[in-house]
Structures are given as structure tokens and as C-alpha cells.
Length: 435
Image (cartoon, rainbow, N blue to C red; front, side):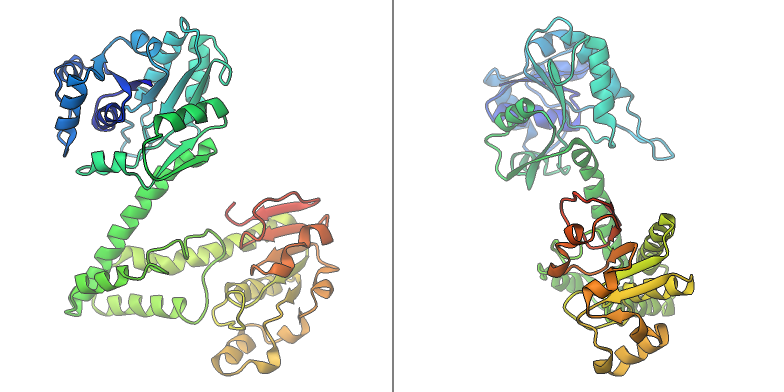
């Protein structure tokens, strides 16, 4: 395939060299004459492992050239990859001037091109940028998006120092598009790249890089805060984290990384509090660890605010224990929610087959007797009894018997805290806590 790459900086230079290695013909485009001259001399524009060899190889095989002529590059390519910088302001806003300048130039170039053209945004941009680029290209080209061209989102996942290997061996390749032809051509572009090829909606593809990098930053900060605690206790933090990372079932895994209701139970609240207290006793300021409980409480408040905004008084909570398949009510966020609703005068009913008040013992019984002393009057193991007179159904635990709620109880308000339904077609009102 013939590819044009706009921006010959870090992302663009690596992309140009790697696309050429994959057998494509690449035309690099940049406003900097010096960068264009370097590529045309078989030299990279950046310092990066393996990049010199790849650029030299592409140059010698006549698979790579560079130009400042946008029109020529667009007319001689099927796909244009936008790889220009998106620097941030002091306030954190992105400067998208380079993105829109390139979009304008590509649009102008498309005026004289008859064949379909694909524009892939590789630069890291916020959701909504793809649409703005599409509108600008349509305006400048006087052509129709979807008919004459398509704009797809194709974020890169490269690390400096290992960029070439990351490009050629990614964990997955992500394309955000609703255009089947563009999807097929992007599959062809990456046909020799290993890993899963994922197609998503455009907004998902646009936000994923920010989610990735923020999580990476969180991991670095978390590890550093653990290191501060370990140093204060004369413990080798690297040994601790080496063991921590060996758990790929919970610690380094998709588990717990599902947006939903707050955490609860006997372990997470107690142990995070103990670690915070330990750090405080050693005069350590650990902002990330200290913020965990506050963020969890904020998630509980969000649910209460969603319910209050509906303007209804009859509430049914499905699931009282802190997670399905247990009768453990200690620090359950559902108990906190029920306590708050009762305190505000709502008419509340609760369903949970796992919670049998007569069988609760020890701290579990003490906790619920203090939080909800009249629980026996509002809880039932009969789902129909709980739901018959309800106006709002709050699904707090995911259970198989809740799968048919939409059909059995139409024209209600369902507030889903656990993603009970992946797809929702409901004769009523449905809202998820984080979707």
C-alpha cells in the first residue's frame, strides 16, 4: 500500500520506518525542511533503538521518501496517518492547532483527488477530535465523509526506547471507525502485525490512550508510595513489589478493573485504612493511597444523587451483601445506600436471597444491627414482593435471576450498578452508574 505520514517527529518517524519494513511505500510529510532532507538521505529524525537501521534499509529499498508537498503526498497515497504533536497548555488543555492545520491541508489536497481516501489519526487526541477533523476535511475538500473519505482513530502505544519493537509487536491494534471500507484497508495496512485487531467506536479509540497513560502514571505513583512505607519500616520495597507482581489473577489482571459500584467487604476498607494509618504514624504524606477511601465514598454519593434526581419515592435494592454469592454485609456499599435512603424518607424494599438475618453472627450481625436495625421489616427473599410496588429498581449485585427484569417489569426506572445487561432495549428508563 502507499501511505503518507504527516509529522516526522517521534511517532511519525517510527511509523514511517516500520510501515516500510512491513512492505508498504511511505511518503513522509513535514513542514521542517531539515527533517525532510534527513529522511531523503536515509537518516532518521530521532534517536531511538533500531530506527537508524530501519530508515537506512527503507531508503536503500526505495520504500521511503519525504516531502513538504501535501498535495503530492495525498494524491499518491491511499491512507494518510496524522502523527503531529498535540502539546498541552499549562492548564492541561491540548493544543490541536497542528492537527487541524494538517486536516485543512489534506482537505484542500482531496479537492483534486477522485479515489477514496482514508485519514487515520495516530496523534493522542481527546474524544470529539475525529469529528472536528472530518468536518474540516469535508469543508476544505467540498467532499462527503463516508462517501469520498473517512477519518479513523488509530492510537499508537509506543514507549520511547522500545518504540520499534512496540510498533511491530503491540498488545493489540485499535481502530475506531464506523466505515467498513476504511476498516478493511486498515486491516490490510496492519496485516503482518501480530496481536488482536480491535475495531471500536471512534470515541472509545480516542480516549483509550489517556486511560492507558493515566493508569501507568498511577502505577508508578502507587509503587513509589509503597516504597516510602517500606523504607520507613526497613523493608525492601523491590522484594515486596516483585512478589506483588507475581499475582496475575488479581493484582495484575482485569479483575477489579470494571467500572461499577463502590468496593466493600471486610478486607478492602479495613486494610487500606490500616496502611494509611501506618503511613501517618511514620509522618508520610501519600496522596494516592490517602485518596482511595474518599474516591470510594464519592462513588456511593453518585448513586444517591442519581436516585434523588429521578424524583420517585419507592425504591427496590436488589443485592445487599458487598458482592454476590455471600451474606457478608460488613462495609457493604449497598448497606450505606439503604441507610441513606431510609434517612431521607424513601420507601425502601430490599431483595437478597443470600442474607438470612437469623443466621448472621458475630461482627456481621453487629454491623447490620447498627446500620439497619429494622432490616427485617424491609428485606425479602421473594423478588416479586420486593418489585411489585417499586418505581426505581437498583441492581446492586449481578445475579442470573435479574436477567429477565426488563421483560418482567416494564415502565420502571432501572439503575444498574453492576452492568447486569450488556445491551439494553427497555420499555422504561435505564441508567448505568458509569455507562
